[in-house]
Amino acid sequence: MNFKKLNTGLLIIVAIMMLSCSKGNPILFCEGVDDKGEGVSCGKKFSTGELTAIVKAEKPFKEKNMEVVISQIVDGENIKLQTMKIEVDPEKKQKSFNLPMYNPGTFQVDAKIKGKNISKGTITLVE
Image (cartoon, rainbow, N blue to C red; front, side, top):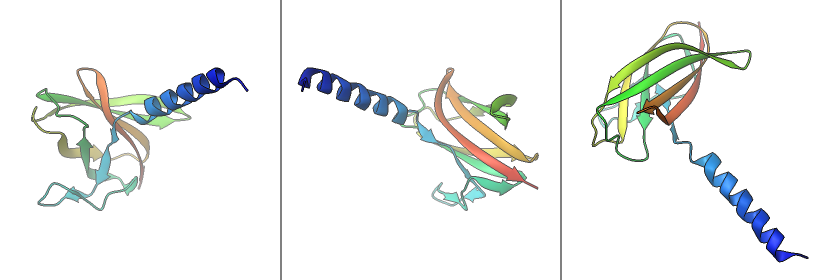
């Protein structure tokens, strides 16, 4: 058995797993937040209407604005619908904001700072 090839293969597998896990924290979709800023009635399937999205970053934002991109998933393709500019505290790692979602379907929401994806989530809305 060639241990050098086995070790190299294991290192590659571990590296791939680490990269796939480092995509940031998922965006939480909730019906609101409590006094502590924690989500209330969170999930991935809701009726259409106003929701609260909660972005939790791994590090402080270090910027004053975050871009939120909403795309609808249709037949496996992401169709960009809307981009929102959200003001954030550069020292914080969490931001909650209203998310108007009035059409049924499946959507992907991406939170970006300086063009870099820091968090994303998928939500399904029904009437």
